[in-house]
Image 1: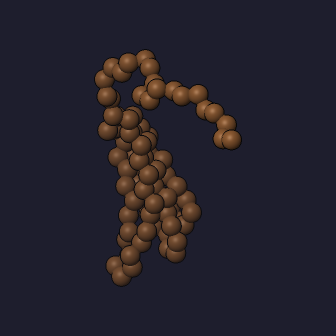
Image 2: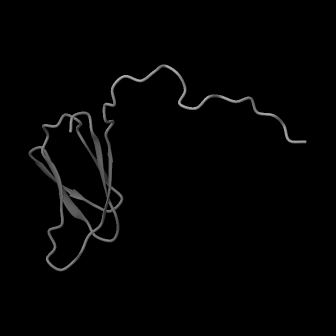
Image 3: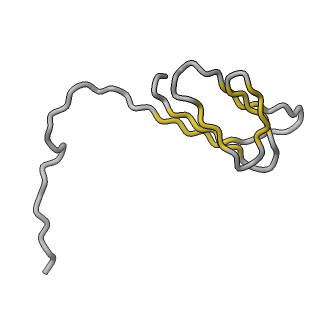
Length: 84
């Protein structure tokens, strides 16, 4: 998606590999990869072990266009009063 920020964080216990464009890099635990938000750069994280399950934390952020909105608050503001 255009303008989507995507982060992959490698969790314990083992290392893995990542591809970013044409580069292949080792991804040790507690390392993060931020993919370029251009919708063109190929990227992936890979579990190359044959007998282990690996874990990553994946975070993505994308703002969906919702059209025009009125320039006013969604909830009417109220004056707060102190409790007796």
